[in-house]
Image (cartoon, rainbow, N blue to C red):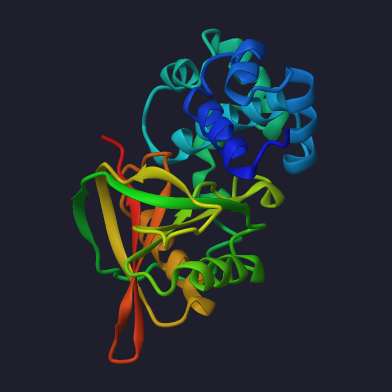
Length: 267
């Protein structure tokens, strides 16, 4: 019996949904129908890290996002990501990032310094509530979200399913925090063609977002993200959540692609 990538993705989703508690070997064996040892081997081959290391990294990355995106108390953040002893949290965080949680928060501007090289712009945005949407999705490791792999992924999906609008890009990680080799990108469409493979049904959205818009080619979409972060750093009242950033790709208008980009707001 060979486990499919979709089945692996379901287990990865389970780990992500329960990142704040210990995932037991029995759970993995029940979900995968593999021995824990064999699944661990398969997982490591794909993700280049073991399950416990993956889960610990998620906890610390989510805590880092909360530190720079919100004003929540550090002790509350520690509990939310599964550390019930703030000393243990601070020790693990400092080991991973070489600064304390308090320093990470106070140095928020420095984290974005290399990414942002110009002054803030007056960005047009909207605050929108988005109901949850059922989609068919697949994820890849995208290595910093700026490479040919994303184009290849969409080409494969379009070859099997045709053009589908709206389509959605899911930005799961923050490359200023996550090691860029671990960054994950999801491609999602509303419907699949009969017999199409490799896409798993899931839900996206379901909450309040700040929405801004990118016009034109994806080749320069990184500059639109830079404009957003320049703007956001001047607006301390706009607190962000640590969940997925979602790109909504719409049909061309007058020959130009329209992409709405949704950043989740912290409530």
